[in-house]
Image (cartoon, rainbow, N blue to C red; front, side):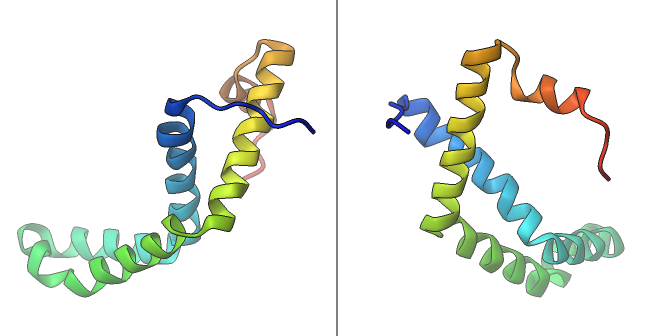
Length: 102
């Protein structure tokens, strides 16, 4: 496959956005623990949820800095871009038409 030229906004905004979404999925357990702590702690969450917040930040940072994951997101983005150029249908619209797998 020939190399696709990506715009600045794609490499610096759109692909990192995909990366953040994937990182959240990969850190789902830590996200859930932090959310649960915040709900239970109310106003004092800043003090009471430090441990959960640190664990979540650490997990997310590991994935944000993972060059393999970035490359996976880049390839997925390129695939979606090529599909859009071919069909004219944005990925979100295609995904909505598919039956829910969850």
